[in-house]
Length: 254
Image 1 (cartoon, rainbow, N blue to C red):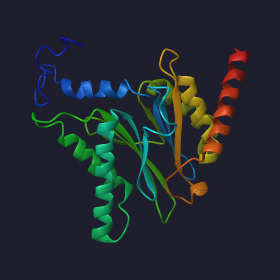
Image 2 (cartoon, rainbow, N blue to C red):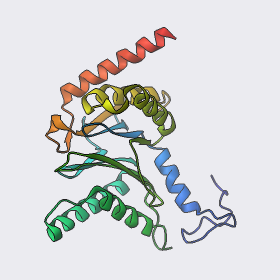
Image 3 (spheres, rainbow, N blue to C red):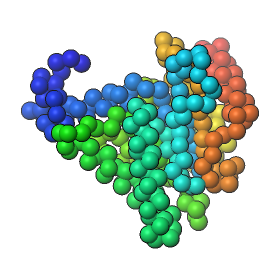
Image 4 (cartoon, rainbow, N blue to C red):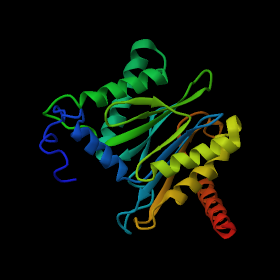
């Protein structure tokens, strides 16, 4: 992308003549270069799944996490630069804790998402700092009503609410697969039913030219007592095996 900005990409405070902020666009490119992260807002909760590239054969399984708890009833999946993502996770935890300390109740998901979005946007306004090179998928389940919600916060600070979405290298293909899933399952999709499908989606959108990857899946649903939790390893491995079987069956049919 050398020379693309023609001098207008030297500072995040500079607009190009056609109204673009190149530093923010470059942050978006950092997100697109990372493994795919998806999240789906199901009937009974939220499920997160991440494609973690294995940069070394010596890595201990389960390290370099890309899904994180924010509070007992909320969690985050990230795409992009992991170090930047962890700063936003820390900010989200701080906002949730401060709200709980001040008002004696859990922070509403919409307010938490907007506060993170404002924080991310602030890093696009000053020349002395750079934008966050990451996007986060924030999922929450209301403690009282058990109503799930899902938000995406992008590098420019934009906050969007989704039924299901994806970020990272394979986001366009993953979004298409999520749309197909909702078209077939409708509003009856549960986290346990979605488990195999999210594993299938990540294996399907994985680029064979990329490094091997490890699947990381977390959820907030009845199986986790409506608290953020990683999917148990044995259940995840069984879902991954079933996902691979389904993909092989589809290839044979073609």
